[in-house]
Length: 452
View 1 (cartoon, rainbow, N blue to C red):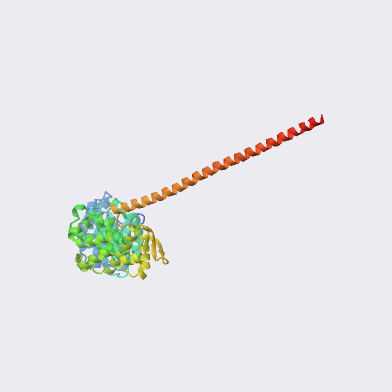
View 2: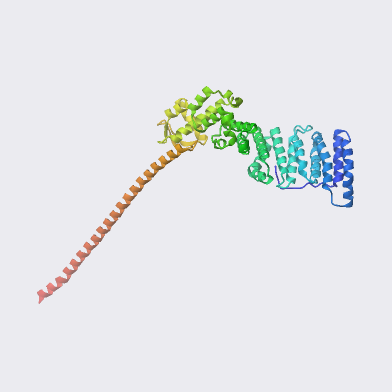
């Protein structure tokens, strides 16, 4: 949606354009009331324009109150006239002393259906909203209302293409925008929830869940027990439990509003605790005593299959992370998941696909060799397991080091011995050489002595 900031270039003075817009609205409504209402307000403005003096923008505001109030009629204008009419109105509003007084109301008009163009109305509205957004400076808080209206139009139209076009901007720019606009918590929450609704409409459940959680984080601790906070916490929690790819509940459990459900919705919070750290056995015991239809007004009543699938995957994850030998027999998995042995491989593969474990299936041995497993919670028990594995690893390293040290010492000894043997061999060779030379020298003397 956003592009580099630009301006609207429309010729004419404020008074001329305001009168032209009023005439157009009166023609749409088939009456002349607006033109007659603004006529006395335009007189001092015309005088200022003729004298080329500094315009009194507060007088502009009085005229704009009338024009913007009547602009709701633009949604019934002929299709080809809607965009230029709104552009004219935007140009006039930007000449106000405080455009923020009028832009939010214009955005609410654009968020409503354009009755004369049911098919192309959303596209026209998005185009106009984009123009408004890009005529405002990057730090202008009015951009908030424009973005809110844009998201509303996308949600109402169900346009997956428009939402896909907006997603990169949300991912890359939204944090910067929120910081620059200096919104209060309630406004930030409203925007996140609007984006979540649009994401649901576009079929992007992961993004929807992300923005619901961000909306939840805007609730201050003092308001955690209020009805609005409870409603949002129930929505976030139920959504996380239902969604097939959500397995990390850390953000939820850290929320004050979710913690407040211990009192207001104790059974729903108990279910969260089961999915955080418990197994299928505990889940089935819970459901036997507390049917889903009785939890928080039945918010999870139609999610029985999804919940059971998720708790099985999490149960297998707990098995894999707590097995010291790193080897799980098919029979152990089948018993824990309450499934037939023939179904074990399917559940292991699903758990691997979910990113919860890594490993190798051995059909020959009927076992799952665990390479890595995700810890669902990390407390004293998990630290003890890590400590135990580190001790095993340390002992293994010490054994390896001992073997290396022994081999090194043996190598040094053998080297010293080899050097000694080589030196002895050299010395022995030298001794034999000396004896031969002595023998050679003594032999001529004996010959000479014999000759004499």
